Length: 104
Image (cartoon, rainbow, N blue to C red):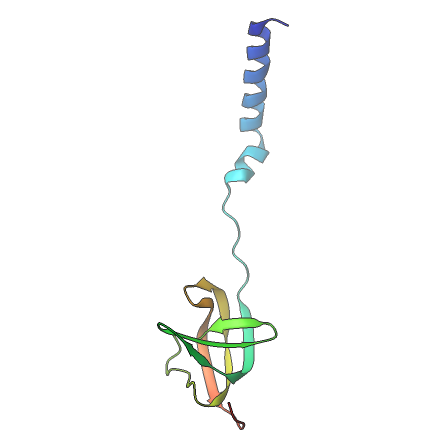
């Protein structure tokens, strides 16, 4: 095979690869994971410098953005939507919490 033929074959393969859907799929944006509703009962803890975390067997979640803030000295039941990673861990949004019986 001559050098010309080799270059022509390589150029043809590249053109086919770029024209196919496989090339487009490599650059397509990934679909975001569906938000997950989470309910956790336990004690939140303050993690320096500014994070408030709560966790159970399913994982640890950041409730730093909760309004009003989740207390760290009471046992609470927290409900929210896990939306993705943040500087303090997996972030819960739309957080609602109530104090429950029990000690921390």
